Each structure stands twice: as C-alpha cells, then as structure tokens.
Length: 162
Image (cartoon, rainbow, N blue to C red; front, side, top):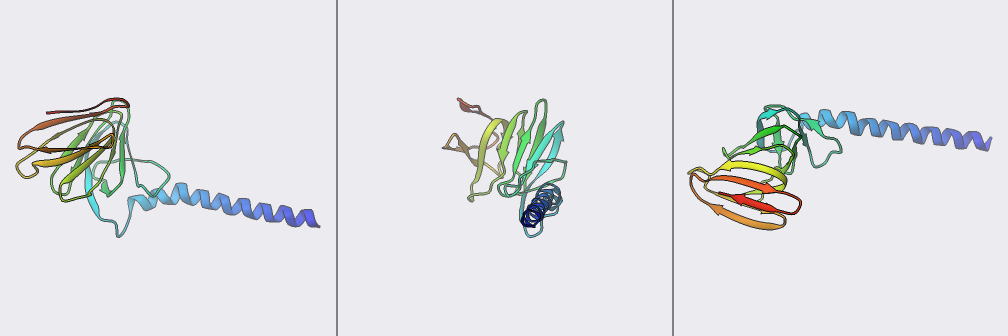
C-alpha cells in the first residue's frame, strides 16, 4: 500500500512538472509576441535569413520577423549569412551583420548601445548626433553629425571605426 501511495505521488509530481515545462516552452512564445503593458522602444525594420529574438524574462528564442516590436533588454541574434536592421522609436537605426548578439536598451537620455558580440553599422544624423557604446565594459561616447560608424566586438578585440 505504501508503494502505491509513493508511485501516485511521483506520478502527480512528474505530471505537474511536464505541464509547467510545456507552459514555459509553448505559452511563453505566445506571450512574448503579445506582451501587454511593456513599453516598446524599437522594432525590426528588415531581416535576412535566420534572425532570433528573446525577451530577457523567457527561456526560449523566437524567430524574428519584420515589424516585431522590441522592449528594453530584449536580445537580437543574427546567424551565419544573416542580417537585421533595428529602428528605435526616436529614428536611430542600427544594422546588425552576421553572428551578432545585440541587447536593445534605453538607459539614459543619450542613446547607449551595448554590444555583446559581432559587427554593427550605424550613421549619426543631425537629429541623433551623440551615442554611447559599451564594449567589453568600456564606455565610448561618440558625438558627430553625418559620421558612419562600424562597431566590431570580438572575443579578444573591440573596435569602432568612423
């Protein structure tokens, strides 16, 4: 009789774990696409090939699509031979090359771009002429009009080319 009770308890615990896991993988994808009450700060303007996005709260990565809204601290990753263009609500645009991991952030009045890994391109305009980049823990402040920037963040090297 005791073994039967133990088996029944274990079966219920495993069933609850399976339901919880299914919720995390399936419903969280639906929830990420239709988040309410979360302020959107950017959107994916264009994407070529395989581009993934992830909400910082969730476990799984989702396929990114043109027009997807991004909130603060969302991640975007481009795979081999892939690219994406991200446009912020203030008009600032940044292009991600292949194998790039980028965190969408709004930290201060001055736009701060946190580069995790990869290659990015952007152009400073008269409207958005000052940007801060965070590369390997170092903050770099760029102030210019009409400058075209290439940001490279590798495992050992980081570089901004103007």
